Length: 191
Image (cartoon, rainbow, N blue to C red; front, side):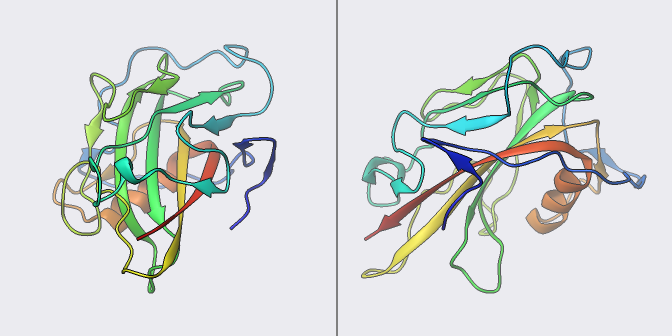
């Protein structure tokens, strides 16, 4: 699976669209204050990992066969106008029907531009994955198969409300609805 990018960073474009109001808990979690200035960084929004290159093999320590921890991630570029927090989502692109969500973190403070391996930002919220686990669920495709994974950072334009007990698909839809921009990084893993 390719990505819309160049070199080892993958990127996407701004995500337009209305944000319908829904009553319940905020998806983006606690905000860190004012929206990010558009010039906080320069260039397009990109997502990278020091653990693997774009479209590269994800190391075993980030899988169910290893330490089952999240890889280090860093995002660069100008925060889209209106960004109030960030969200990170990891999806297995080969599980059908999809999307199969491996990891979802919302409410990452706008000043945060990286996550260390196995860490989430203070004040952020680890959401339930498709297997109902809150937190990172490492890559774990069936033996003998290669699966494609996509990490996406979402520039959140404001809290989207979903019921507190919302499942991962409903939370993902709220994240996508409230996004003012995204950047993605693809990788593969096989057991």
